Image (cartoon, rainbow, N blue to C red; front, side, top):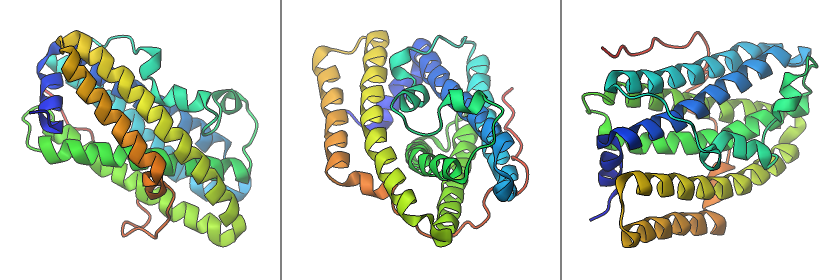
Length: 262
């Protein structure tokens, strides 16, 4: 019987699929770290108090990338090239979501609207990240090799999501509410398409590495399409709501220490 736990366990038990899983994750986290570092450096003067939080966000993402690389090193496998069709972060940028890398490479201060766009993009993608890590924590929090990493990254992603809610609400109270809702909706509808396409691509690669039968691959693909259908019909709305989080000022202070992998 197929289940999320059995599927993840199969991927984790095979060196090649484990290397692909960790490489895809590490690449996305590292890209997120670079993006946040550049945004922090280009924050407009009127929003400079946000810079330390954005810097912390980027430091967390960099830390997560190092954690996935450390897991591969401990396992004795090497990182593998990330297939372009599985590159979630870059595909979002290509779909016009978030701030373009070309813009971030210029030494030109961002605008307040740019910061709103960044926060809206982050609110949507951190919702996905928080949910994915919550699923992994549910099944693997006590895993001898993955447990500490899963718990730490899940905690960080929850902090990132709380930070996005709090800061977007601050901007909404300052008069940017309509722009925020418009940007959130566009981001969410694009993200669910990209997530579907990336999920299908990742499962196709995993299927080849693990020798899945055509019926098994078809069932998994159907499940991915069913999730997209649910999200397209209204599930995307969970990504655009804003509520004041219980975790206030979640990104104050430096990033926490990384777990050690002997």
